[in-house]
Image (cartoon, rainbow, N blue to C red; front, top):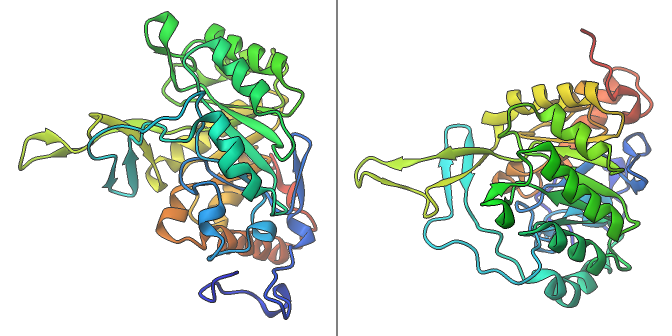
Length: 324
């Protein structure tokens, strides 16, 4: 059901409580048809099933990028996993998940009851495991992959795959070889030149890019003189990283021809519009859902209001239209 705390225009909700998607917001990203350009960010929205009492996930989400999956089930990190910061949040969850096969048996059958494109966010410790993940998860009900390359490359001494163009390209090549589904590479901002990483994965035939992943950060408890997070460092997300994310989306949009999913601190429809003007074809909303579980539906309405205000017929007409 849809929570009665969600506010709609009268024309958006029928007598059965079903939300009617706006045709102005309809889009296609990497061949995936979506009712609006908003994807729930991996790790902040569970597997979407946790939010069915708050929003109509079949009609108010463009797609879901599920909780990050690994080849085998993981319990995640010990100690404190999340900490609030000024205008943001740090996390070091540690990819707690049921594993690829656990997802297929426990989660995907439930998701298939909804009219919702599903992206599998995948991580692994080796190039070979990334390929195995893509092959194993290329099943009915999965519509594409968001490939997280911020994970350590165990065979190369622990350096993250997304730091060097050649390592990022190797992962992209392996995933592309093992699936015919859309492949979207999720890039880390913790690099010297993100455009070089973007061009390297584009050359391997991936369908799109998502950025940015979290910035690396830290929080300290001055009373105990100890780090707040159990893992010492964590990923920073939320409004604090938005200016950095916008800049990187714009830079990458100038460097590659494949479409971009923009993310990083999107809290309002105006934020989302900024990312699309900068060159993103769709956006991903994360921390906002932790503040307000109905935030994605609100952001979609605000995006439609923007289109109405400026007499724009389709959200696709604003992509990359930043005037500089």
